[in-house]
Length: 280
Image (cartoon, rainbow, N blue to C red; front, top):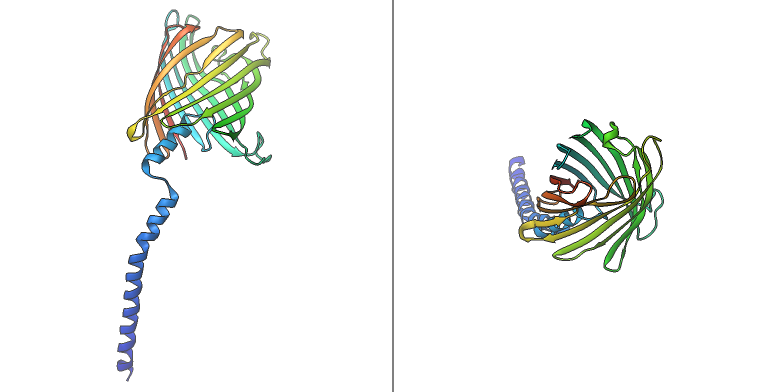
């Protein structure tokens, strides 16, 4: 009796298990496909979005940039090697993380360089000054517009690598997205407000244009060399650059750039720079 009753039960259990396996096999691919569709856009869109985030002063995703470069100078200068560390951290809030305002987000950008150089005054190696920029941003029609402040902290470990002054001033960023062309600009105005009495006062504005052209297969051409115009302190600098790069998925964008200083301080200097941009 037990054996007779058990066989139908086992057959029923096997039939139920087989039915569940068949149902799972038929349903799982559809669920997985739906999850993939919701999680990320197609590959080309992923790459284009990563490029746009890496080449704007007003991103909405965290950027961690490493930018090694080598300059072949003219005149008394012999060489300059630099590694620029540039994290860009968007956050909810208007210039302060706890101060949330509808339709606004903010972007904190930190720039700190490790340098090694040799010029007419001799060799120098160490860290340069730290620049901190904080912008509150929002969408205004087709534009992204941001405004806030920028500060330079005199953290240079060698006087030859920094300006020796605490600096403060307003900062403005504007971006016009498009396809295949994106354009943006970041303008920062600095005034020395404190620091070493042995260092001269400075007052200047930096203008950094961002021009990006999307190419097929997630390649792109870019230009983003910052210009500095001094009316107090050292001489101005007007470089131009051209870069070629590619997005490798949604988390990494890399490019190589060639710079040439056209006017004023550093005229004729040639710089090669590699940009490694990570988007966690």
